[in-house]
Length: 120
Length: 120
DNA sequence: TTTACATATCAATTAAATTTGATATATTAT
DNA sequence: ATAATATATCAAATTTAATTGATATGTAAA
Image 1: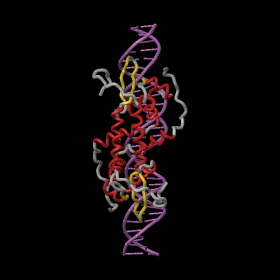
Image 2: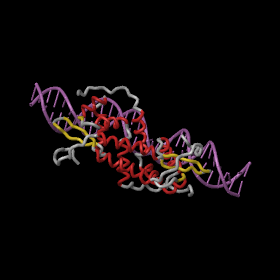
Image 3: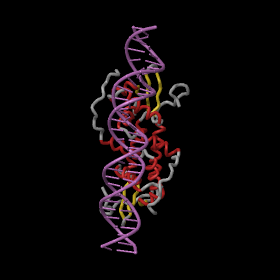
Image 4: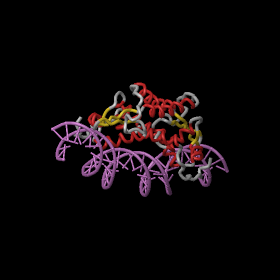
């Protein structure tokens, strides 16, 4: 309970934690969320995405790589086009983390007004 | 389909997108995921968290603020202690985004091996 | 009422992510 | 072959986030 504890040497984060951390990081950008929204119903090639999002190609490519590296997207090449699509199982991994969290957490009593100054 | 589209002037991201973006960003850090794991079963005061995570107080305080600003945590003061706890409804917001995404996305055919050079 | 403790905040630094412009690679059309 | 298109990658610049050490604020114990 003291405050004098020092910082420990960096522990390697557990595998699961790293996977979640990277997945959530990939989702933490508005451009990447827009990419995902566009891919929700159909796969699209890079130039389609480029047009619809009005992004420069290298910028889009960077974000696609982030999403692909975390397995949230997959791609397939057809001729000179590369089509990207959602990889739903990886979204499920993140969703399951959140649902487990809620499932295992105790019901907290509803917050009574005035009970908590940090309210709001 | 051309590649010559210019970058548009930054559009304000939609409210929902911003909320999701910030929520996921808050989850995209190993320290913050550890905090959440500790709070999963019970609320804890800052000094408890400080001890268990072996973090400096100001560092922990920074991360608690990130989580609280995104509504993933709530706090309550009791004497000189401040107790933090999960705010499950906000986790549900993120979970629902992911589940809607999966619900609305078409079933994709299982990937046949060799179908895709970008495999793996 | 002075002291110790718990927590938050701040300015300065460090580190990490993003953007940009240029270039490279691969594919197809001519 | 040569040119044009689609995409990826890279180094440099920029922006954003995280860490650190110090200090401020509030609470309670002595």
